[in-house]
Image (cartoon, rainbow, N blue to C red; front, side, top):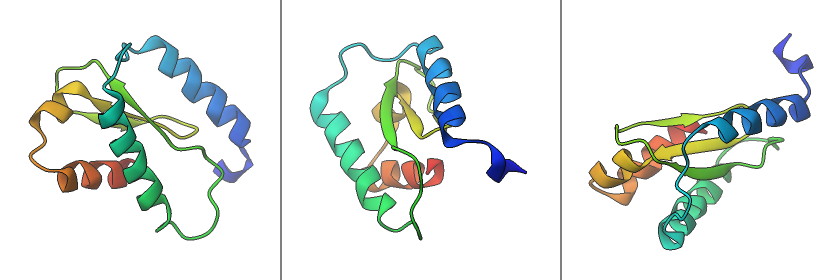
Length: 98
């Protein structure tokens, strides 16, 4: 049944939710680039073609958290960025969200 939901609907839902969340307005572009590069590397390990444009956003949340929204948006909290002890730790979180 879930495979009958159009990807476009998932993207629309995810973007609607994204607009309601407090995102960093001026995220550190170097950190964002590293996170997005990590997504690209991990995406290569996914079998088959997946229909989503996986994008990382930095969430202004102080708690250590991350989440994936419908349609490919993934949020990494500022708290997680502050507390992560290594790039590999963040890669593990991103892999989980993918």
